[in-house]
Amino acid sequence: VWMLDGSSGAWVEVRASGVAPSPRSFHSCVAVGGAPAGAAAGTEAAPGSAPIFPKSFGVAAAVFGGLDAASRHLNDLHVLHAAGVWVWARVRTAGLPLAPRGSMVASSAPAISSEPSSDSSSDSSSRSSSLVLVFGGSSDWEDSSGGATRLHSDGAALDLSPCLAALARAAKGEPVAA
Image (tube, rainbow, N blue to C red):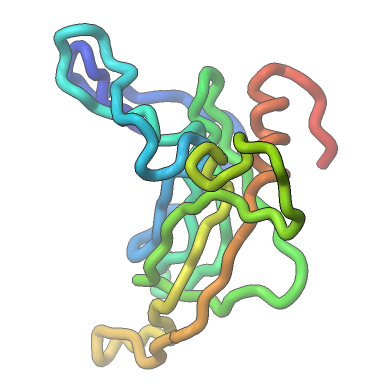
């Protein structure tokens, strides 16, 4: 993992523990776990340096799908906790998985509760972005034609709240159930 240092402008390699995703292309990567889009802008960079990451960047990045070196489409999901201690985790999902794909669109959004709340802090402008929304993409790569032969029009909302909480505990050195 490489990070741009806001004060020096230099790329710095960051050591991350855990299970990193395999090399891939045509994947999606979105910031999750921080302030939602539209939150107050700002940077974590030193005073006087160029802005690098807005405060709304989040505390993690989610990587979904893509195409591996053998031209196989993937449907795995990995999360990189990027606050303090850097930790990768592969997210195990239950139920019917999305078909393997690449070139899909992904975005993060605040988690939505089905229960009404009178707490003003639970409105969408203050919740962290723990959902990854995935839509479309392509699969069934043909090396002879140099492209995908199947286009997808489905989508999914992947709730990463439990994973983000577990990664935050792991980054603090607390035990995390497998």
